[in-house]
Image (cartoon, rainbow, N blue to C red; front, side):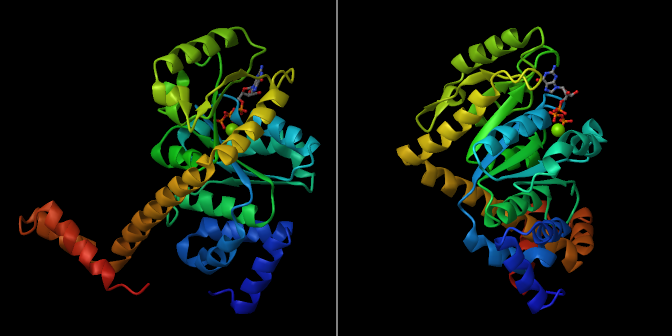
Length: 322
Ligand SMILES: Nc1nc2c(ncn2[C@@H]2O[C@H](COP(=O)(O)OP(=O)(O)OP(=O)(O)O)[C@@H](O)[C@H]2O)c(=O)[nH]1
Ligand SMILES: [Mg+2]
């Protein structure tokens, strides 16, 4: 690593000791890409596996950040340390969301038991999902009891990130158009808990009823791992239902552990993560190898069909030591 072995060791020790600057530095490395963070992530991984990872997803503006903040306060009351990774896909939907989140999160930022980080790494080497999951590892290794991952439930990377949590909370809200938003975003079935936010607003009850009706029609959405998926109404404005949501998040983890589903879930998450990383790594190496233009030219000239071209690229990978 370019940082040098001694610096790398100091960094790892700092993360494991829960030092804010070391944590921030390690997440920045993760954000930079594979190469920069490879050694640090390998050293940290054995120290992960203790945190409760909670994905908070839903369409833009559904109230995810507000809920993350309210949940964090609830977990803090219970004495738990909370790490937050807010994934901002730098999409036109959420330009300025980082600034907005920072303002709203400001009161939490002064709490030493809370660490907040926004990631905006669309297009970065190795992908957004990898960077986000590495960031979660850093916070897990740093000893945070709960790691909340906020991600918009639109787009494959974002859904993958949410899915890589022990507990997935899908947030819907009234007033964001008709229809069940979780279905539009394709995240109905990944929810362990549905939260209908902004319960202080008119229409929240109807949004919750629609959601319950949809779940009735979806065996996979209604229950999984022997857990019946609840639909909870919350309001960050009045505080209604926030304590119940926090308790349900905790109850879901206990359920996974008591039922033996936790190990299965962990396995599924690891499998998806390893495959995704292999995919990203393969793409990165292909792009770096410089052979792509030539192979594409041969396809265009009719000398290679696309599948044969892909095989040429894959065969080139095994020779790559990096
Ligand atoms: N009345 C009311 N408004 C809320 C509630 N929760 C969030 N809002 C408002 O809804 C808007 C969106 O809230 P956010 O928490 O930023 O939503 P988000 O899902 O994080 O948004 P993106 O990150 O941009 O996708 C903000 O104006 C909030 O103030 C609530 O419980 N009641
Ligand atoms: Mg947000």
